[in-house]
Length: 212
Image (cartoon, rainbow, N blue to C red; front, side, top):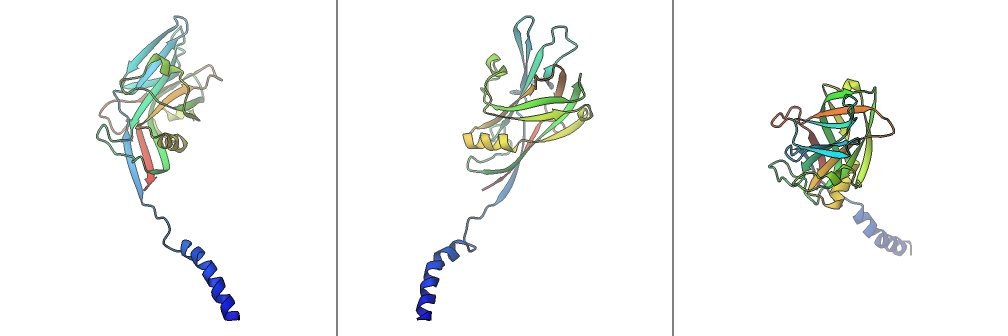
């Protein structure tokens, strides 16, 4: 009788034991380093006095924040584009990949007018033909906060943007496109991001670790 009960119990547990064994899902880990597409990077300056927008495509330095030196105090917003599909000959993040982590590395060449510059990094989507005026304040797909400090000037700053990258992957975006905005809870702060073409040591860099 005991033997019969044991065999019945074993038969019930067998599917569970098999499912918990070594035959489960296995993941391989990969890394992709992707430089921004400099001709598509841009900044937009809004002059509230003149109610005008100035778009600069592919500058050597991207600006965001409020320029206290200019008497009209224009507000700048910066835009970065990282192709995820290898369109510019760089690494690829497959659409089926599961994102483990994503880090954005920026060389900061200016921090002005504040001891701390609270900022937003927005995940957005804009045409590969270039940013438009409407992209200055379009609704973000997702956003996160980051602070910049005077000590960041002249250095590479690494920012964890895993939530933004995961959202871009979930949405199936071909490019990770980011907008940098000064937190207008403060009224001062101006950041310059190095974006010179063909200077890989300081170019904006996206580092993605993913699983397949």
